[in-house]
Image (cartoon, rainbow over all chains, first blue to last red; front, side):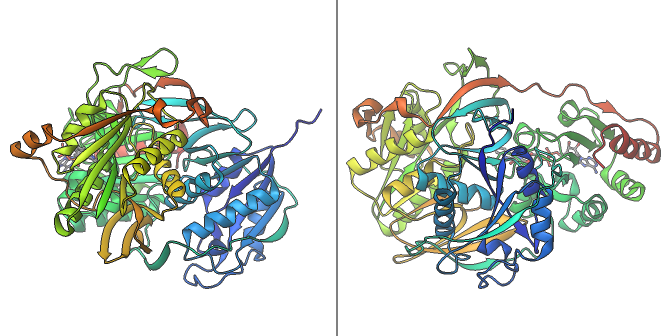
Length: 329
Length: 256
Ligand SMILES: Cc1cc2nc3c(=O)[nH]c(=O)nc-3n(C[C@H](O)[C@H](O)[C@H](O)COP(=O)(O)OP(=O)(O)OC[C@H]3O[C@@H](n4cnc5c(N)ncnc54)[C@H](O)[C@@H]3O)c2cc1C
């Protein structure tokens, strides 16, 4: 007998006109369910054209990609007015779609945007939300997530008719599961006016990968000695398809901006591969990267604490080792 | 300006967590600290009041032991505090938000409420949004630069890949603070002495008429995450080590 499929909405994030890899992983988390891929007006519009309201999901790539990864229905959501500048209206629009389609589960990415919109939505719907999950059982409404900066893993169970959950990037590998993928349009009921408005977006100076979502991260600690030496890591990162991170000591010394900091007071990353270059391995740094699948450390001090917390260790000077690594890739 | 700061009492992040039973942890011997992000929230609130006048009130939902954390935080310049007492180690965020709302409303609505961007123990990232919604206040979270121009607020938040958004809103509003907003002050001895005399009003969660059996999320199990033990140390010349590393990452680990 066929199992009853659960109506599951997945909020899709789009960047530079393409579906983000992390969103495909979220669809895989819902594999086997009745998946609705939800695209908010803002997302599907061209990145630098926030005023465009109608999403261009007809572009074969987005729709086909979503269908390829299991979306039976692709819903392009627009509001009565432009949603792009109003995070609270985006959440209202999503709430209106949830009511229209009667979703039992709603999944998203635990990215800066996903976390914000899901928390707004949970408040509007007065529904349970678990952020940053690494495992999910949709039938049982049971998830696993980190507590205490990765020192413990908690198993949580949600009660209620709808369950909201954001998934930690890279925790679920995307697996294709082709469907026919039907595209529908939904105009959300967002009568109220936004209380908060995005008045300016400042792009990053360099076109770097997002740290929290990158499949590979290479980090430079205090040992990097100067801001310009990050160039060595960026060259390596380009070959790896990696994002570049920093330790707090490197940030405090002014070598890197805080947006690059990994750790308890920086970003939590969970890539497939984490390469720590000249990082000692303080608990606060470890807290931000311990759930990485494979950790490689390069440090000139054979007794550095990082060597007891990594999978592969290289004793050596980062300025000797990293260029050789780059060359071998 | 009347400003509330929501402060959470959390285990010191540098300390090990010992799981007890199936879903609890040993907390009687454990060192607790103010949630690190909440310190940015307190600093911001105190410096606004120092410039514009008014008062800063801390509000905590937590165990009786949170008293010590509140005292420490008061030395940063808060005027008084409210502690909503619960025996629960993990109070569901919807219930916590209800408790915060009731405590804040009973004291009188503020012009601003600050919180940290999230708490480092349960990492839920939502209580402040639930509170904002319940009070009908706008909220901007993960704020690293804040400007007040009369009733107008400009808050900058980072959204990934180093991209930043500047968000405009109006008072009264809620702000979730993160690193970069300020440098939290290190209280000096006179401030610590003065904090000892400040008032902490205690309310029992049960007095607020909140049904704690109606939680939305329950913690079924808590497990220690095994630490990595013993790295494989590569050997040979730098060239040999890198050749071997790339082979391992491609063939054994399959991450390249
Ligand atoms: C409340 C709190 C929050 C914190 N939050 C964070 C956080 O979010 N993120 C974070 O990273 N830290 C955080 N810290 C700081 C943390 O405790 C450490 O101080 C910091 O991580 C150290 O950074 P580091 O490893 O780069 O520097 P160091 O500890 O100075 O280590 C540098 C390492 O580089 C090695 N080295 C030097 N030169 C070379 C070379 N040429 N080649 C190879 N190796 C070399 C050295 O052997 C050493 O091991 C926090 C601390 C506190 C108290």
